[in-house]
Image 1 (tube, rainbow, N blue to C red):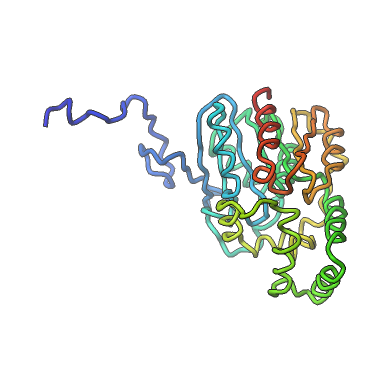
Image 2 (spheres, rainbow, N blue to C red; image 1 turned 60 degrees about the horizontal axis):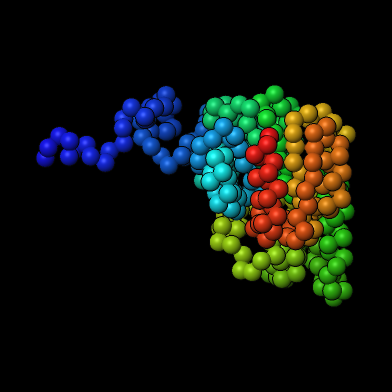
Length: 320
């Protein structure tokens, strides 16, 4: 075969930058943006994936705790096309990352340390940190400690305290038919959260109203629910989406929001688990905060209020 034919179609080797060997990622090999990052002092590794290229770089923090990046795949239809570089990241114990059986790992301080390890591992600085739900809580914590690394912050479908979340959840529950509410409260009194009856109420009445209001649910959302690490969820969140009695139950940061000086977008939706009034309040306490509420949609408003959600998000990312 002629020499020129043998190289035809190959990428120019001069544009391939071989990474420094780290023992986790194959050196000199293109991996479709996937990079494993060592965490907990190198004891474990977490999965990340870079998509797109651009001056604005966005690291995505998924919700849960205990879920995975999958349901945030909606971002791939909007950010890369706009020249925005995005990074998926499965937190330790979730999705494609290591899943150690060590309950001491499932705490907010430990995940805070992990997030900084991931930032360093990806070489990010002056980036936008996006957090959805529990990821929004984690993003607030990170901004309070490391905002010198941020050019912007997005807090999606999360408020600055658990008590405000509980008030909103109680309001949502009170909208159930009387007989269903009575059954739900009886099941919760017995602690029967893992029973078919409790699951049926969640999936029939509450989730289709407050979590995702389109039918059928997108495949990425179903995939995320199918991969949830319930041990992490139960330890940190609690018994269910509507019972917050895990180790995050006392988290409140309303009084510290004025310390976050970077441009911040607070996103919500009219049918969300988070009260739109609390989203607006949060933005008002942030020196450079703005609030946007999707006119339709719920907790996963990147799916069930997509037009509004990405209009607000992309406008913010283009100017940050």
